[in-house]
Length: 533
Image 1 (tube, rainbow, N blue to C red):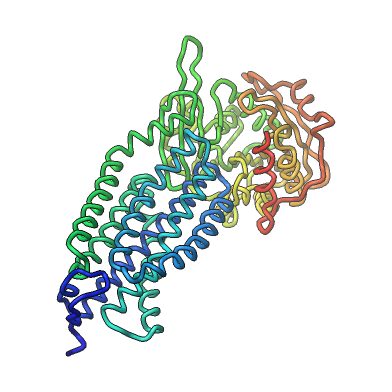
Image 2 (image 1 turned 60 degrees about the horizontal axis):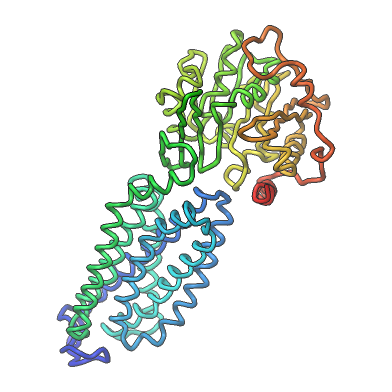
């Protein structure tokens, strides 16, 4: 018989039919390898979706990635071993496994979001889901190898090479499709559901069509109905996904959600509680509170005005995309320019266009002295060829590696190089009460960059005891004070600022490590301290 046609086997161990569908062996192998390609792409998307969701919900992306990857790789080995007894009924087993993988992987993000929002069982649920998905992915390879060998026998090395080539290329496509197509276009939940549909069609439909004569009639009907059921569940869940996401997100916040946007960088949520008294507008980034309109003036006055008692003709703000620090800077008529560097353009857009926030920042971005730059502050500073009299570092707390680099000795070294002669910087530094190791590590890291430091702290009811570090090049710590003639402050004055420099005995400087790019100690400190607070 010519090698280009499928062998006319009269029956198989799976029993029931006159032989595989009559297609050429080359075409049959191509279809199976296409299924390998698609399933590999889907598997990697599930993996990335679980990692990204954890980073959004609980931060600490390194920990989330480590849990997901280690559990999944271990489970893949378990799944491969568990699939060995199934090779005698490879077609049915593979179809069932792909149906289960499509269903579990497709609804995995939704299930974990629910576990986080309502059950407070996120990490246990993450481990269970990662293990289930990994085991099903691991079971694919032995069964696919069996199916390929049924089409045409070849030596093990060549078969493995073909199989893994398709698998790795599929993983490449899945890895690129997730951040550049699925996540920005469909979001976490809908993106995973769509991938589940692709997984079901590629894994079940293609193989069942190609090997339909090797499966008994009852088994074919059962598998077809199973595939329809999986597609029905995924499709129905897709239709309900928006409503679910709104309900789950609202369960995480006390006040009604006014704005919710998931960008390529973060999840932005603004809540607004209206009542008989003043409304309370709150901004959350990835679930972490950034300000409450009830007391944000305490935070921003304390951040900005001690710095502005020194030279401030040219001011640089790193972070602060809500425009509230910019509002305080622009109080000073002798400020010639204020440059704000913010990673997420959507945050700037909201600060410019969302009425309550725009009113709160007093239309700061419309001031002709204000300049905005959408860039990563770390990369932007490396290319900087300008100098500034005052630099405000108003970044989110360093609870993962991506933000911890913005609190590193290397980062502060670049900030120092951006200072004009006589210039100074101020850094929001977290809570010396709830996270004292983190606070003093930030202070020590600033000092390690060659800056003399003056730490201080104030009470911000929404945050608790909150700290800052004022710093300047040289050996003399900068003095805390207010610029002559500054008016309109609601919280800060001379006596408050004088008291802010005093720390109680149980919250004074302690022996901690500096935070560097190579050793991001702050991630460890933040994880320990805020978890226990």
